[in-house]
Length: 220
Image (tube, rainbow, N blue to C red; front, side, top):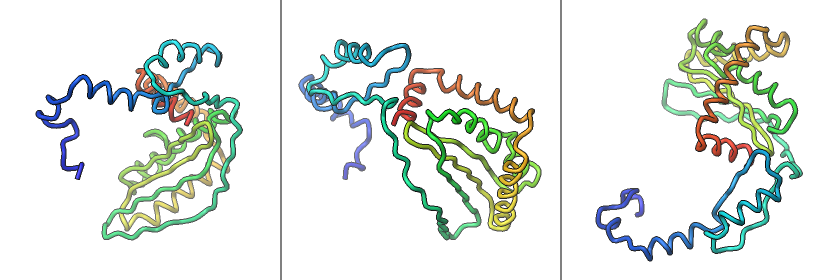
């Protein structure tokens, strides 16, 4: 099968590549149908299209599809049905994952939810880490994370523990959720999470590669 061959090719296969092979590959792969271009900043749609037509399309052999402007896209949120899935395995460890649908990036409450996710389980001093991992010592790891794009989003919580601690961990997990619902977060938690969120954003935007990866996640 193809899995039997090295990803980078062998010495013989690489050496046998010709310029015609490269041109043929470019003609097939570097088409407008296979390229996603993300632009952000002080550009109108018309200006962005002009730049693409001038610098990108000359290298493409097919007519491009119509551009998608997500700011004007009507969004349909699917109906989510609550369900539980248990998978039994011959292991002493228990993996717990809980997800819930949330708001999309463009929602005015997205930044508030982002801070809430950080305070609840998004850093080492979060509610989940402080109570269940540090104070009780019940889990190997525990966290929550928010993932949202232009269409929808989800809040995921995860922990890894052993069979003996699983029921107690779930009970404390539910208890921490109820505390947040009843009492919210403290000012100290809020300020700390703001710094963490700002730092994470700066690190994420530190290179073009990570920036465009983030843009693709948000837009698609």
